[in-house]
Image 1 (cartoon, rainbow, N blue to C red):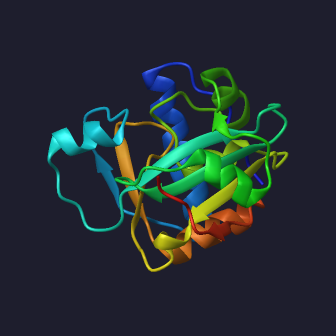
Image 2: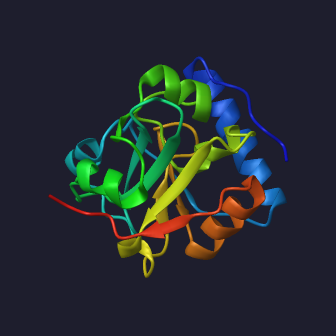
Length: 178
């Protein structure tokens, strides 16, 4: 598997994003790419007031209480997640949000640039992928291509092809809300 290096500047972000898009194309994944102003949060996307087809996602990079296990959770952009209940559900010690340093170390992106596509950096498969069961019937998932100034619309088939190529088997689970 080809892996990408960490990005440091906007120019490097563009270069790594292009490298990612070429890698995806080599895997038979050619999603539409939509350029836009920087979006750091789901609220930023709401304020932009852009209507796109597909399923908007919230991407949460989580760690257990000891910092030994990490997971990327994808859920609906408007969903609040009960981490206490989710922690018991998956059998991990108290779940919390991973730091920016951990995000850079494991997924090679900065806060606000996270998406499932960052798993391309997780060569050693140290990050688990958790998908909310509410997404099972979704399609055209909105994903940042390693930068928050663009979005790709990744079909469910392409999402599963991507995770297969990176060696990340998704765990579909009912994500509890408060």
